[in-house]
Length: 212
Image (tube, rainbow, N blue to C red; front, side, top):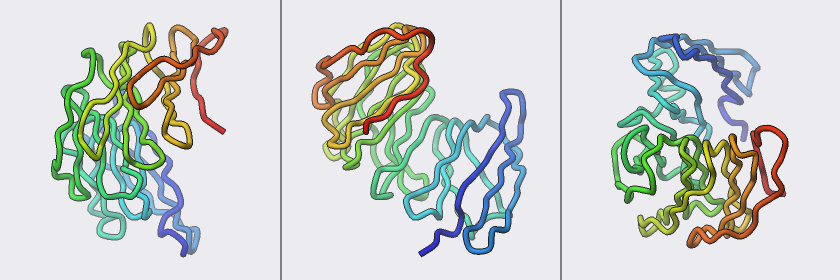
């Protein structure tokens, strides 16, 4: 079955109070465009697993012109957000404070323990099984939570400077981190944060990584 929308292309400058994005319909290739006034900056959007819900990243998005055809989840606080694998909940890494789990209506259903350090979140990733979330910060800290038990299982200072990207291995046993400032990629055991490997330093910034 074709999803109602294929992709979202957006633009939001750090000084712009509005978000502009285009949604392309998969059924007839027509486009729906919207410019939405913002009180916060939005740097990303993410579709839910069913393709029918959007959640904002670093800010909230509302668009009466698109709803109810494209319902949009409003987060309780600004921060990074991603869907749990089955779409049953959204994990939010607030700009300030401990992570949250919210339902599809944006209501808080769980508050997770605080992770190490005090830096703002830079990136987050959900394990393929949806049972763990990893969050990395501007100050180089990495934390992993068990979502089923709502416990912090790992917390380490992983890099000197910003951690640009995270990735779980396909079996969820490892977490890879990419340091933006130190130019190093590292592997960690997701269950307890034990260091597994450090890849050779690179020239320049490590901007992305992925498991095969």
